[in-house]
Length: 243
Image 1 (cartoon, rainbow, N blue to C red):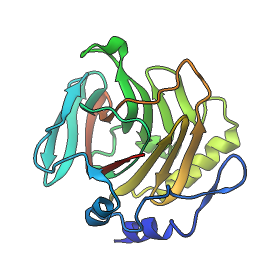
Image 2: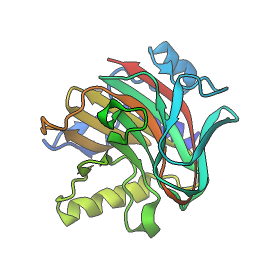
Image 3: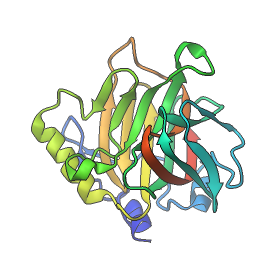
Image 4: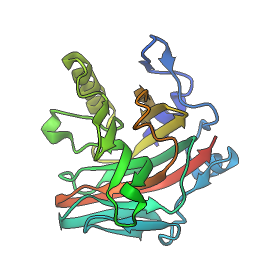
């Protein structure tokens, strides 16, 4: 309930400044309440049916996915390669919102958006924008809701060459916002080459991709289980509204 309240209040109280010094607000069209009924009334459509993985397919890696009590679970031990459960459909401009939490606090994860598989092959490497779900690396980095370019350019927001203070501030905000034991609400807003992310009601990344070679304007959504010794993550209330 606390997270839902925080999420609702943030519509009226923006928390973080963008690159021009103006406060970033949650996207217009996102309802004050983040529950399924309010999202549906606002024109959002569920991407998970709560029963099975219809409309999705697993690619890469050896992790597994299942529906567990209405939520999507991604899990595995000694996972070889990054594993993704991706939508069969592709999306361009949209608002995507969902909740996630770690069951295994040692694993790393993320949500791909506007993603693609290299060379268009069914077994091609998943590439593209990723909204990070950070395992915090003992508190030294808290980049959840940062934007990473999977299998390509690496960190985009915060950027690899960002000043140390900017990275430190991003980590400090992440440590303050993230509920390590409970559910966390993510919002991803894509409009043209402008990408924004929000964590539990506060703005996180605000990135305009000016790299014409690598800017992706359309692609699939996918949830990741990162390769490694162990991973166990839940996602629920996955809703998207095309713009």
